[in-house]
Length: 356
Image (spheres, rainbow, N blue to C red):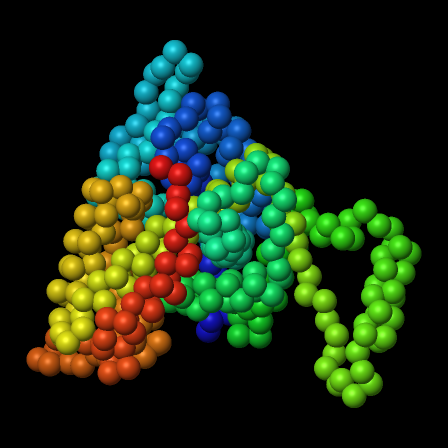
């Protein structure tokens, strides 16, 4: 059944309202001109065509946008006249932005694997660059092993949000495909190899093998593998694409981080599911008001319940029923401030500061 669900998701036709909502929420939250939005839609249509995704619309992108804006209505999209032309702006106040995000999310499955990889890249940036992004054209190297490790961790965190693969697929192979995608776009580079021809590369690998043979004793049975490293292209163009992919999962990850924060308050307490969800929503509203969260679409009940389900799967939360009411509590191993805080630390790893 899972393969069919995944195939059906990919076969679902993308409508004009989905495409326009997606572009506005991910690339143009502050609004943009009709002409610029049309160029972005042209590029998106090309990417979807390459990915063999069905489109439920045809025609010139300007006409498609105008039709989608009419369908979505002024409650979700504002259209205004300015000196530079028609301006299209998403309505990002609550609760309107939540409805707009439902239209946008139809496209999330197209980019989610790449978004997981790039979120992992940002996490590595955060650890290695003192919590900052690399400067333009700064040389930054990232190991493949850490990329795969962090990506698999994110797959685990988001297991109740997406069907990432069929049962016959390995998740690490999906990470490698995403790495190849960024290599094709020349965002990830292999600096040691990219200037050598095939014969020179073979000679270099053979020399490394001989060097290893001389440097290691005969009774060392461990195979020798050099972990691949990639250089991240930090040009403005590449970083812009990385930032686009990085923001795709942020509203979801914020839900999980805040949910983890709230369960730290469950030490020696038990709460009904409804009260716990309301506490998470209240904390998110506070963080939105304070500017610690940027996306109002995070304030949804479904991902909060998925986060609680994840914490149950991780054996952090226990749940029992009383009079048909679900009651949550921390399991004994995590029923202390020190232990439950480790869950928050694990999730905070992927919450790289966004540009406000």
